Image (tube, rainbow, N blue to C red; front, side):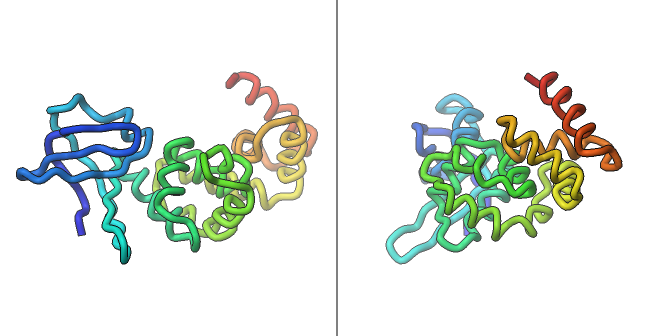
Length: 200
């Protein structure tokens, strides 16, 4: 298996990058995030890679960040979710947002990615919500706080109230998770709204 590539960037477009290593050009399918961080053609690049081996294809996927690769592997471990969906999700949403959406049971946010309908997003959340802690994106504390917030009745009520006001479930859960869980649901909503308004 090819785990990493270091070489000269020969070519890139909206779907892939070709990297020359030892005289061989490796075509890697990439996310928009990786594409935006690639150097100029002719310069050296380093990618973490994942090789997909199927009966009819041998494809290589490249990621500038190791965290993005780990989230890609997690997403594509869901039955019926292929590499194309994994790339689409990571192109339209940051890896940390995907993990936060899964942790807060927020499939709707995942539907922002091209090709991801609500049923597929719900299946991803259902199958991965117990596994989100296995990927370290530097926001593990936030993810645990979000999971704990969703489990408490007052914080769960506050999250639902914020969702009814138009915030996504992951935005609401993230804002509530930063507050004292001993507060009443009304107080949680008021303080969370202040925090969310400051972020705009």
